[in-house]
Image (tube, rainbow, N blue to C red):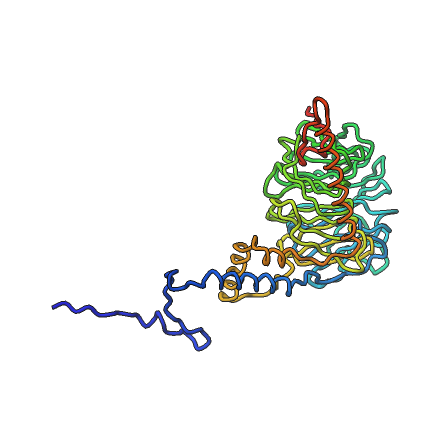
Length: 452
């Protein structure tokens, strides 16, 4: 005779410690849970509300400069440090963990500091700066270079140029750096004169950025509304893109060598593929004033931009609208922004002489999380992603309180864009012959592309 018996292991329902929750058997058959979808929706709505309730992105404001912060540089080999340059010629090195200045040069340059960059390498403690005094200076941040407060430390080396500089960047692994003024100059650290001069028609070059992945390519933007790509192997330009308004800043994607983002005067951020620049890959539109700076996150999936409208916006590279906006009552025009190398924080320098530290995710909290906490966070994220198109959840997730000036300017800008679009449609509708063709948004801002 066969006897069937139920067999159950005690490990399936016994707690390991007293603090563990009781393990209960659960049947996942959907017929036994008719209200499961309603419960999930309610949990998604509550998760969205809790996210907005605990969204406190601002961490600290670090003061010390007596003029606006117009340039900034992060060190890929040191998460804790950031270098800033101000309008009165002062350089400061900050410790983000201590939130204070650890090194300063009060009179580093005569006039505004236009650019700073770190010398690559984990063992190097040097960085470079340029200003409108036509000088490139090399500094050391080691303890021996720290001087008495109020006294400018000695430079390691100084290079003299013929024109006031407006930007600088260093090569990834070679002793080369580039500067921009009325032309792009390539310098060897062992020579006092530039080894190559690169130009293609621009009166003044605003920014120069070297590609840190495809290391022989660099990009510059000028006052003639152009974005020019150069090749260091041949010391010649590759291609030139002309837009309707000038570009203020360029940022290369650290994970995709051919992609770069530009901050434009027409309130937009454009993402381009250098292999085909006749149209933008994406247009990011939410700012209501000129975009002054842009930077990629280390993952290459997010962007941060700072604008003349006194706000900072964070973007997903695959979406046209910002996922968050940061602002304070005291923050003025934002001239430089950076993602930290751990992808958790954002830095901004503005006209009010303060360096501000923000969370990259407004509701995220630091610290070690238990497995249960991490599982709960991941479950809430999945729920919000699943129900993000439900009107109630979507309204909560998109709700942001913005300053009255930005809100009014955004409404005015929307009316202007709608009026322009309506005018174009009327002209197209009433044209007797050869109506004007529709131009995609990704091509509207591009006047032409020239390749050499």
